[in-house]
Image 1 (cartoon, rainbow, N blue to C red):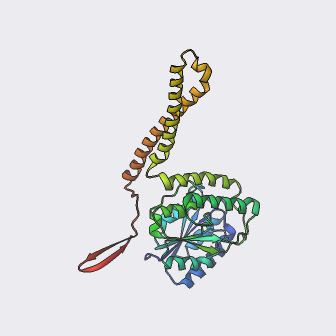
Image 2: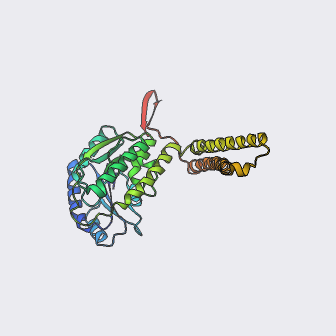
Image 3: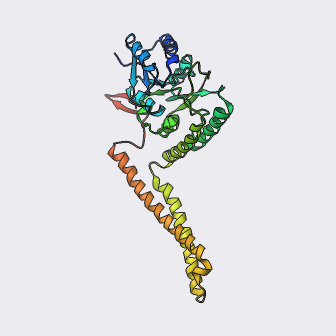
Length: 329
């Protein structure tokens, strides 16, 4: 099979009622687009007949591929497996529960054709429950926007289109799939948001609830550190270490001068808590400095041992054989 123009990556978990309708609608849209394509389903250890249905479809469609994970690793791992398997020039990811309409794919592709590297879906009119989904999602998206500096309204949706080279620079782990736009922006990706339809689930039960929101807040802290300090961790730990050493040293210096000028006073009895605070601040500052140094060594080991670059090239232009040549990175 020649390299397809499009790779459609769909993670699923117990989506038996939606699989056949999704496949029919998806193939109809892709045939209408008129580009070569492949469809990759990632079965995240479903316990229903989802895999059996997909296995039967594979027998009838050479453009379909199904990856079955050994256990339920989660959506981020399922997406990573699909991205690793995809060979298309443009990769499109969407959920397998039909809350993402395949008919919106041409809108995402249009933005990629305009020159953007990542087209992210925006559920502008969400139909979810206001208390358990809408309000927490709005708060989380606002926090993600502030932490990452990427101006998106909807980080959480899986429905996105990527140039394949963008995903090569991104390693997914934990639950960072919702932060792909932020991670891509670190390497200079051009990102645009595209309104998409958001429809109720036709069948089945949502696997995500209010409890997931709390995990998002921890991920926001992680992504903030990764985007800002992953290549220079000493800048993060150093400033707090300096504050601790400076304030703790100042307190202890003051107490030393006080002791020398008031020899008859019992310093521990008079200023015991202040002395303890100064000592703790000084010690904490030194620990943070040491943490910063160790983090710098780890960061360099990470980039150098894996041959990873701290930059990304968009294109290279040079003259070859008397003519200008341009290579897209």
